[in-house]
Length: 215
Image (cartoon, rainbow, N blue to C red; front, side, top):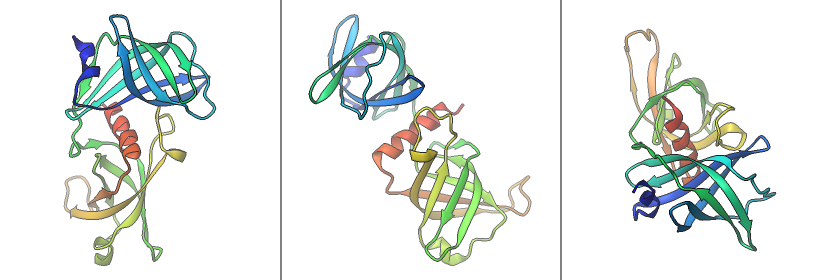
C-alpha cells in the first residue's frame, strides 16, 4: 500500500506544511504510529506554537534517497507534551513523486548577486537553477582573478514561496565553474555558471521545495 512509503527504510526526512492564521508553518516530523485511518507524527515544539484547527489542510513531504513524495492530508489533532507535539494526520490517499537530482536544472528568473571581499560585485538575473548551483547571463566580463576565488552569492526567492529563507534570500558561498559565449539570441552576453558551496541541509531543503514547485 502507498502509505508504506512512510515506513520505507530509505526515508530521510518528513515535513508537514500548513497555514495557520495566515502564517506559513513547516514542521519536521518523525513517524510514531500508523493504523488504517490515521498517522501519528512527533515534531519538536516550535516557538509561539498555536494548535492548528481540526481538519486543517496540509502537505506532507517525505524525502527519500530516490526522490520526494508529496500528499495532501488534514491535521486532525495536535497534542502538546513537555518536549514535543504529537500530530494526528489523515492517511495519505495519493502520493505524487518527483525525482530531483542535484544536477536537475530548471529555468527560473530570480535576482542573484555575487560579492567579493574587495568590493567587486555582480547583480544579474538567474537563467537556471539546481540544488548544486545557478547560472546567469551578463554583459560584464568577469576578471580572471574572480574566477579563481569564491564569493558570497545571494539568491532572492519570490515572496509568495510557501517555505522561504529568512528575508526570502539564500546566502551561500559560491565559486565560478565555467562560462559559455556566442549563445543564440544572447548577443554580447556570457552565460556564467556558479556552484554552491557548503549549503546547510535546511537551506537545501527549502531550495528543493522551491524547485519542485516550478513547472
